[in-house]
Amino acid sequence: MSHTGRRWPVFLATLAVVGAAGCGVPDRVSRLFDKKESPTVAVRIAGKSHSRADLERFFESRLNEFRNPSDGDGLKSHLLDAFIEEQLLLTEADRLKIEANPEALKALVRATPGDTKTQDKEAEASMADNLKVQQYLQEHLARQVTITTEECEAYYASHLGEFVLNDVAHVREILVGSLELAEKIRAQLSAARNKNFAELARRYSKGPNASEGGDLGQFQRGDLPEEFEKAIFPLAPGTVSKIVRSKYGYHLFMVEEKIKAHQQKFYEVKQQIREKLQLERERDIINREVARLSKEVPVEVFRDNLGFTYIGTRYTAR
Image (tube, rainbow, N blue to C red; front, side, top):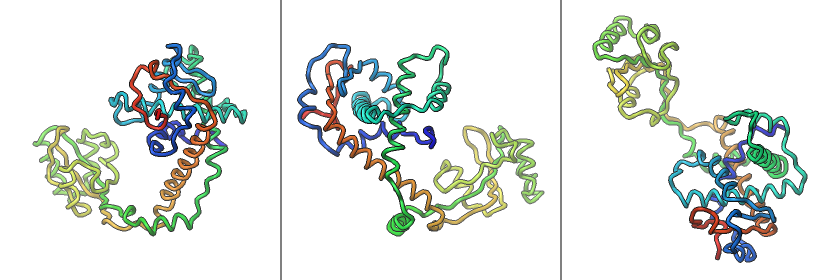
């Protein structure tokens, strides 16, 4: 079984958010929450101390997974919860004597920016721990999840509104820098009944898909800027739009094909539904596992040493 296919870190980093309203914290954890400690220790989990620098490395590795990294204390509070949860899961992986897959670890180190010859040992150890958690989740928790076709069908039947596909247009584009050239090209298209659109796109367009005859692919209504959609979606297949001006230049669009909005069939969305249900089941199992571990594994958080104001979600003191 591959150990690199599932991106568990993203999911782990959001557990604190989705589980904030879930289980509470044992009294023994909350009693220890404000205990004083050496300034070098920010969190202690299962007797293992983690410094503020450890937390900052974790935060830095996860910040790109959040859309609003400017949310200071709130963001770091969620990330602290995620750090604790990952460490709790790591204690269970260690108990089960799970070791990081060597090939997966080498691949991860190679993919990490920087000089791999001088790779920081602490960073590499952190990668190994992360892989152990992923392997634990994949091999011991996720394998418990099975989604049947009947369950997918039931979800589809009760959520038909989620599977309505908007109007779709297959679009080609010619983008040029002047109105005069755009008008000249449009005249040539009209003379050839638009059959030379791809040829003219390769010759004149400065768009990124010029070499492919201006082929932009398919778009649903709502995917494109409003001024483009107003020009594109009224077109019949094989026809060319009026000239559209934007900050990039002057555009001509041709619609190759149109698909009207329609209710997607079950076979079209079966895999999408299966993945959605799979993720929900996995999230539930992992949340329950974290709740169990939080009752069994000692967790100490030292507010004064964190470097930010912990506003509290899952591990707040009572």
